[in-house]
Image (spheres, rainbow, N blue to C red):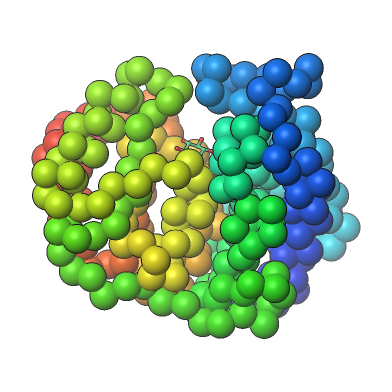
Length: 275
Ligand code: IPD
Ligand code: CA
Ligand code: CA
């Protein structure tokens, strides 16, 4: 499939949302009257998340009126059928909402459940980079937010020792925290460098461009990883996605070379928790 139009539309939508986010960058949204918390005090949604999602939905609908758009804030689910745009209007909302410059806009397109396009755009008020990919066309990163980026590929680091691995320490669910801590502890014991910066989409892109090696997250939603999966696979990485016990996704992603070690570690540490 020639996905060049889809890629252009996804980039336009991401950049427009990125401009909205950038206008408010550095603001402390925690006590804003329009900020709500979802599952916990650390699970925020700001007026800017909602405005970004609306803009992205409008831009996609202008070009592809028959496509379904599933956004984090519109509370619809992924069906795995037909053309579905899967949108995280701001990934790293807690960072954005406290003024910490580490967040992005993430837009993926799946057709019948298969990822075909991914765009992850971090505006200049955050990392100032855009990663993108279309299935079969390679993965790219651009510092000027155009489709004229440089090809990217995963690292060749092949041991857990010395690897840079993103883990999660759940800020929102005590039920997951013990498992998260067990995974992070074991990674540290195996001499991985463990990081938890707070944006799944950026984690995936940084593995794709070789600046990190792996990512383990025991419970996550489709919009956190839909774009990143396409970018990572196109950059040569590996991605294991399983249903977690509560209906969310468990994802293990990497440069491929440490995938088996990460999978074994998670399966051993967390044990028989899948349905
Ligand atoms: C969150 C981030 C974070 C992950 C959380 C996600 P949000 O998304 O991706 O890295 O640990 O599980 O919910 O709320 O900032 O869009
Ligand atoms: Ca997210
Ligand atoms: Ca979000």
